Image 1: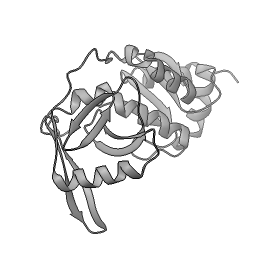
Image 2: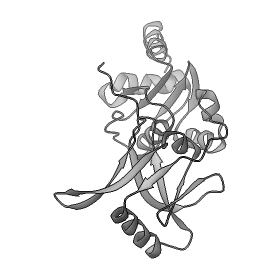
Image 3: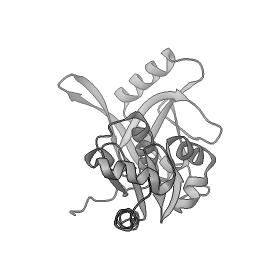
Length: 208
């Protein structure tokens, strides 16, 4: 199948509508396939804003974008008009640092952030770390929209490590650049206690 001029122009307009455009199944807040979800998670770590186009809402576009890019699967990522690839290539590009360079956000050396942990949160984290596999560490992750997560996972030689209140927190360099003066405590929730990460330097949300 060959694209007619109108279909080709429509796709080019969509690609040119944002610096970073992801053709995916679903949207950023609700991906509808695992591959789309993986690319969203990668982009969310790196940049606060990008455009998504839901191909499930338009069967014609879903087929046309494959013809346009000569790429048979969804998702498909474009950065400043350049086709990057699908899920596997995006993941490989992220792991190698190439994607960060294309996005212009690869950090250099970062200072070790000052982070405090309240006693009850520190106790919970120490307990969880003691029960985790030997090669697991307590990880702090803060994405480009300053949404935070605490989890247990393998460490990396590129991690930034912070020792505070008997807990070793490990994080990637992007998280470290966003974590200055972070405070971790516990809050009571309907289903039990939960960790809360306070980020005093997070940008103030704006309307629009």
